[in-house]
Length: 145
Ligand code: DQA
Image (tube, rainbow, N blue to C red; front, side):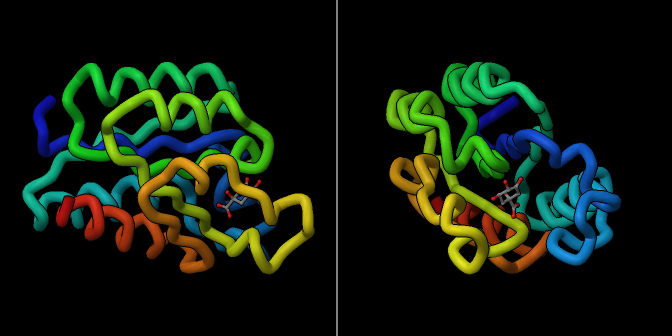
C-alpha cells in the first residue's frame, strides 16, 4: 500500500457483469475489467485495489479505509446506490481522498430515477457511458492527480 494505490470500488450487482443485461453493460466480467486495469495501472506506475460489494456499508468502510491507507484516489462505481445513498455522499465528503465516479452505461440517458447522482455531487469527476474503458479513463485521470 502506498500513495500510488488506487482503490477501485464496485457496488451492487456488478459481481454479475458479463451476464447481467449484456445489452446495457456488455459482456466483460468484473474480473476481465480488473485484469485490464491491472495491466494499465502497471504502465502508469500505480497499483489497484479492486473490490466489489452488494452492501452499502462495505463501500462506506472502504472509502474510509482508502483515506486511512493513504490511497491516491478512489474510482467508484456505486451501481444503484449512486442514485439513493446520502450515506455515500457523506462518506465521500468526509474523506480527503479524491473520488472519481464511473458508470459503464450513461445513467443520464436512461430512466429518470437514474438521473440523480449523490456520488456525483461529491466526486471530483464523473465518467459514464464508455463501458469498461471508462475505468481506464478514470485511472488515467487518477494518475494525474
Ligand atoms: C451503473 C448504472 C447504475 O444506474 C446501475 O444501477 C448500475 C450500474 C453502470 O455502471 O452503468 O448498477 O452504475
